[in-house]
Amino acid sequence: MPRTPVPLTLRFTEGPLRMEPSRVVIPGPRYVMEVLNDLRCPWGGRVLDAGAGCGSFSVPAAVLGRFTVTAVEPDPEHLAALIRNVRRNADVLEGEILPLGCRIEDFHAAVDEVLTDPPWGRRSGVDKAPNLNVLLCFLEECMDLVERRKGRLVTRCPPEFIEEVVEEAAGRGFLVDRIKRRHKAAVIVLRHEDNPNYHPSLEDALDAARGEPVILGEPVPPSPGEEGAPERVSVITGYRSGYHVWDVPWTSRIAAFVRGLRPPGSA
Image (tube, rainbow, N blue to C red; front, side, top):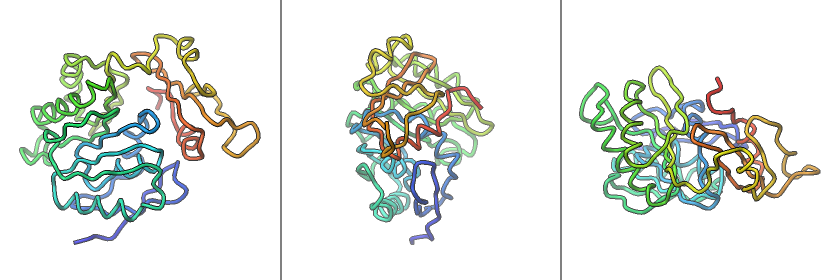
């Protein structure tokens, strides 16, 4: 049965999204942005929301920009709420959302980036306590999907499992971009070692920029529509594993998104 939608206000949206919960509450803006902050999918690229629930990552990602977001969710109740949330917010979607009712191990298309809050503990249906084996099996499936595309993966996980997740990722050719520790759940950003959008130095990243360079943490260009505003920008982010270049149109949503970003590791 449909539930009453609740507002979700994010810094890059003109107004609140209307999100219907399923069996769990809609997470707050801070929770959603912890993962979405590291979305760096190529413009027009493919994003996977693995274990999408009712669309807490899928809908904001498709609102932000022209991405094709595949939302994989095996639970019929979550999937039904996801489909309703896509329809409810259709007028503000920049990208496309493809709801898919299957398990992550049954999804086989290659993607540019994975955003996920994997099932573990109570959500895994296996145990009330965090279950490392369930988490690693789920993330292995996700990494297999982006490995062929030399992509990225942004995931939440219990802080006590960070070392095991990083070790598993390293064995599959993934480097750590950043780790943001929280009491209940950390955010880990991983990228494939061959990702072509990374460069060893800031100078190399600036040379690779195709739009006006915007270095994360420094002043940004004027807002779209204002004098001197560029048509495209290259957002340069310094991570542990190198400098990433994100070439995107300078839209009002991207501008608001970038203005809210903080350098990795900042409070």
